[in-house]
Image (tube, rainbow, N blue to C red; front, top):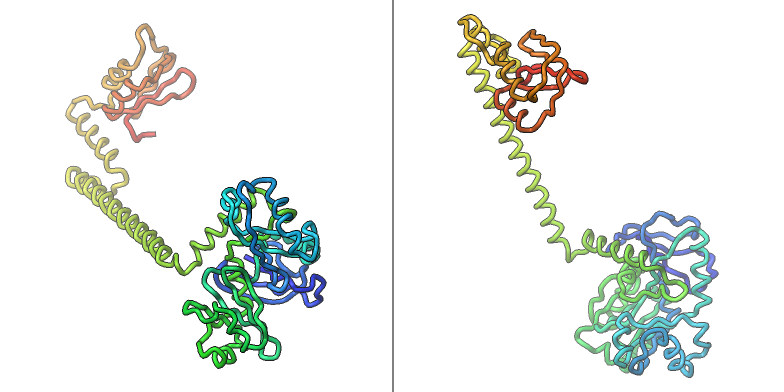
Length: 397
């Protein structure tokens, strides 16, 4: 993920401060021109500085949802804005759809359209497609005091349920803001302001650099990429899928799940290896048993290559010496072949050599039942040419 902090002035010459992140932590940060930013950085998020956003509350009338929502919004804000509503980028809160149906109060983020166009233009010219536009600071149900900058140039902003408020430099005037006295107030400060905040408020703030703040901004529910900056449904689905993947891979809350998946995969690998080892051991034991039976039964066999085939050959030799016909002699092979030969067919040639019967001039259907019978007898039948068939013991080629 590439997070780009848009400058307050769209024509700033210092370049764009940016952060490479996994969606939850800062991997590296720098400042550079738009042309130096990677065009293959994954999801690109632009962060609008707090100084370029205003937050207003409006009372939407019932049934103001759908295509008429923007016109209703323009009418409600016309007397409260210095510029024409058409010149401003107005974005309603993420949960506004249901409120617009039934009527109720909601928040609106207001930004100058021309400034946003000018700030994004160099990025677009450099081939970067901004997929989301997030506010640097956004309203929060739990009040958050954000202190930025250094002792010579500092800013303090209060994020609360009604918007984001820039606090006066004189801390004595902060008593007017009731949120600052709440027990659940969160205080976040940049490194240069930690000591001053601690001495002023008598409480330890949470250290948060600008880069960390921008990463936190990228997780906001607010998405200002609407209107002329909106993207299609496919891009939104891809963005949501990528955000979900980043959450699963890097979010601290998902760490037990990640460890569980790693343990499960490791267990599966160990189990498969153990099963393979057991099967391999059983196969080796079976092969050793066959070899032992062959050598015990036929001591003349000293080198075992294919125990079943060698045993069959030794049995055939004994049968030949005793005058008994073996299963691979001519008569048994002819009888077996006749079992699969269709009635009325007469072979043109019959050739027998090396315990293989070659029959020419017949056509066989090679039906499954006949092949099963041959297999049960330890024989295999294969076709050698258009009308030539070879019948022999299995395993012999």
